[in-house]
Length: 218
Image 1 (cartoon, rainbow, N blue to C red):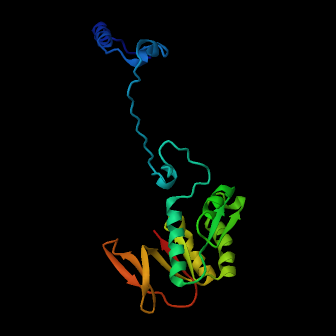
Image 2 (image 1 turned 90 degrees about the horizontal axis):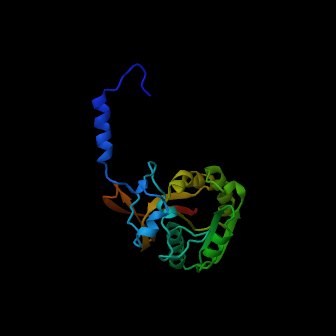
Image 3 (image 1 turned 90 degrees about the vertical axis):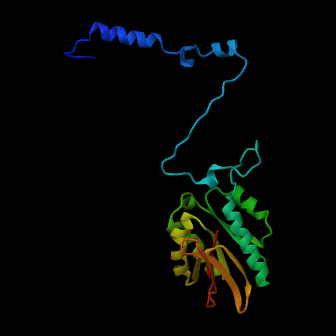
């Protein structure tokens, strides 16, 4: 709508000429007429942009192509932590490793973890754990660690574990060895590998003390 401004006749004709010469678009065709005129489905492309990023472990399915991802699917990085705990238990020569599953309505997840070669799977299923909060996770894990007195506690390397595991280690009086990428038996105990200088170098470290050590496993 124009107020106080007149359109010149030539300007209107110029606009009409442009409109006439525009190519015929799909949107100008009735929705049901395409199927009647063509048997080939047109090729389309879509781009998704998420400005704050995507948690890929929840975005990409671990199932085979064509399969439907079921509720309770455990992220791959959690399975890596389970495998690291199993390896630690084997090197220690003790009992099999145990796992703790946190969340709300996690029966399917717990059943999936129970299929692994573990001594036990402990479940903390409560509505307060439906969404991540440091206090909720620490409140659930600290009593379990005190009661079980494990030699090692392995966590997947996630934004959440970076946030709450240092506080959890302080709560239970345990040492903390972050960003572990590997370990192997050595003289005087296990030797842990972790990156330094932004991953440019790999350091070999040992831990001291008799309390449980928490270790990130990437």
